[in-house]
Image: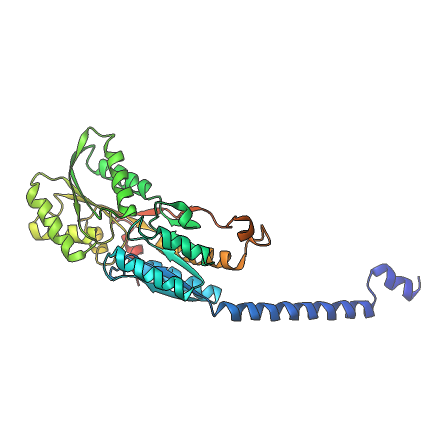
Length: 338
């Protein structure tokens, strides 16, 4: 066989190979250049988390997820919101954001109705919007929800509580009325307890998600119901507030507690058994996903359509349940922030 035929039999000649390699390198260079330009464009994008209340430690994990996602995507992130629960102030901040036109907004709504119209206006203006942790009443006011199934969280907490009570006892619930997330969790507890004839909810009180006020509220429950068997908390601040009140009144170990979330000031009370269990949200994952979802929408990243807006088919899940984990004294050491 001649050299020419041998080369043909093997496929590409040396000249052809070198030509194709050069073309490949050129294409790679072009792709790298385009990627660099895209990265440079992304650094000018800002994704905002508009929270209902910023003064509580609960948001540490969520901010960690937000900032990690921003770093991974090469975008800026910002955490905003009123220091205390204030629906009017949150609405004002949202109105200001729409004027500034950030690249995307994730919202934990202080009121499930008040933000609907401006959220729709933001979307109409081309700003993608998702809800995190708590939802709004009109689901068309956001492209998706990321968080736990809050009624399911309450039902899970209710089953844990029922087991701790052996199916009978008097229970009080500390919550934040008017906030969808807490209304849903309270509804879940009620539904779970309804299956046990021996469990009675004797009081439902507002702790305003305020650590100091929560201690006062918990003390009030202890005084008002001397035969109380358990206090349940649906928000991040309630657990530590209940535990402090129990310590102050000498009721620790006598009144059981099922709490919510994993704030560092609460976890020592889980470790010493004052709090029997707490349901920890996957908050880092929640905000990490939310930032990515907003980015996907902005960049049409999921290639289902040339432009999802033209067919009104946003390529993110309309509902993402990130779930919770159950924390007890057996596994609490893994949940302390380092």
